[in-house]
Amino acid sequence: MSVKHALGFVGQAIARQRLVDMGYTVVTENFGVFSGEIDIIAVRKGVLLFVEVKYRTDLERGNPAEALTKKKLRSFRSAAAAYLVEHNSTPYQEIKFDAICILALPGQEMIVDHLEDILGP
Image (cartoon, rainbow, N blue to C red; front, side, top):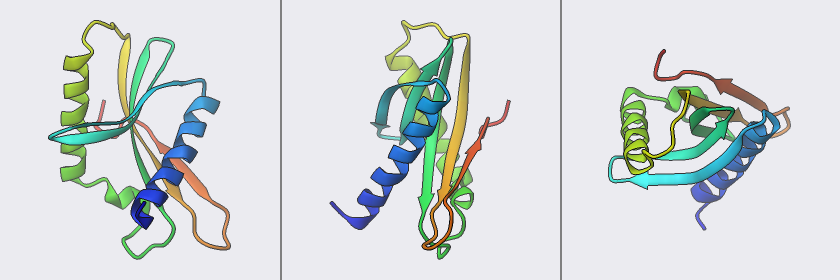
């Protein structure tokens, strides 16, 4: 496993636990299609949540939220649309698009930011 994949696994585990602590049930992880990937898909009380996870252990490429570029958000939206087409039999009261950004700098307390509605209302 590459360092990048190992770090991604760690970040995703932290995000998954955060969602479980908030009462979500994780439905699937790493749902990928030709146009993109959804890191975590979870549900809670009629809400379907698509989550992009960004994890950083340094600031060389900026803080985690800076990785949520227009291009990344387009592929995120496209992958979510593909998931909805593939799983259209389940009705949801609400569909949300969030990001969990994690900054784990050596020697410092980890910062976990849950950014809601990253694609807008």
